[in-house]
Amino acid sequence: MVMTKVIKIDPSRPSEKLIREAAEVIKRGGLVAFPTETVYGLGADAFNRLAVLKIFKVKGRPPDNPLIIHICRFNQLYELAMEVPDRVISIVKKFWPGPLTVILRKSSRVINEVTASLPTVAIRMPAHPIALKLIEYSSTPIAAPSANLSGRPSPTTPQHVINDLMGLIDVIIDGGETLFGVESTIIDMTHDPPRLLRPGPLTIEEVERVLGGEVVIPPFARGLMESDKALSPGVKYRHYAPKARMVLVELSSYEDLRPLIMKVRELALMYVNEGLRVGILCSDETISHYKDIRALSLSLGPRSNQFIIAKNLFKTLRAFDEEEVDIIVAEGFEERGLGLTIMNRLRKASGYNIVKVDVGNLAICTRRNHIQAQ
Image (tube, rainbow, N blue to C red):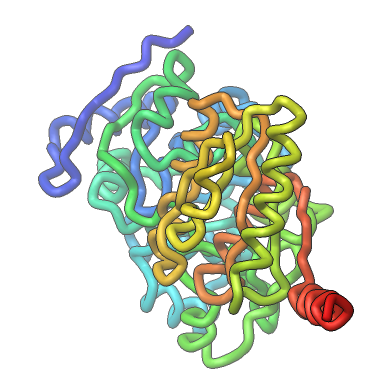
């Protein structure tokens, strides 16, 4: 058991003294949980093998699941990457600091423990004043996955980190709730065209506009399957999962939400009748349709605001954990813009336990039944 120190820092006026205190822990080979604009990270000196191995041990993280290295200055990119093509410069100058991670060929300085012995390295520059100062004062790039136990929903508040890692790490920096609530977008720039490995707050449409061309989206980036190899964080293993079982209901088209409501109601009532404590993960537009069901219904927000939906996702999954539900029936969302990110996380959180509703066939069946009834 480790005596974990919680340090509260105001991100609008970050205390140099307190951040330097946390940075000394990084320099000594310790572990520090810190806020970024996406989720909380669990950081260690990226060049310290023993410190990096502690991350895997504390999280229960598979050793073949690589980490992202966080930097605070552009020139650190050249310390970590063997080559930095012009198109990489264009994209990082546009989106850094920010929620973009790029995959590049790694330099000889990068240790195998960080990259799971892959020839590539994942690098990003976070857009959070506490994170940037922590990296600067630590005098080293910081390797950091999300600050949670492996497989659990990523932490977006300091309390989430405390719940998972108190007594396991040296310091938790309490910097309040994170901005985006989902992890960074990961683009593999070693391929031509580049490949999306993990969708995040930065949409694929925004990336393609800057690159001036297509970014390939493999099935695993949509959350439709696991990659057979952990090419980057979040692509191979089940992630973001609540303690309860989860069923995700998807529509072939989201223009009409009535088929979605019907299927979610059907499943929720079935589980209630089985004596299970049921949670329903829904939206502002649909929550009223579940009030008569003996279940805990929680809305992610309005479907018109994907930012809010994404921001609330992990927080809401953890809320179901706190209420100790047995099973969650979750609504799907349209897969455009941030919807790709939202559906990636929901599909993986469900362990690919997905019920698909073909709206076209449903409409045909409904019309046929109506004609027969006449």
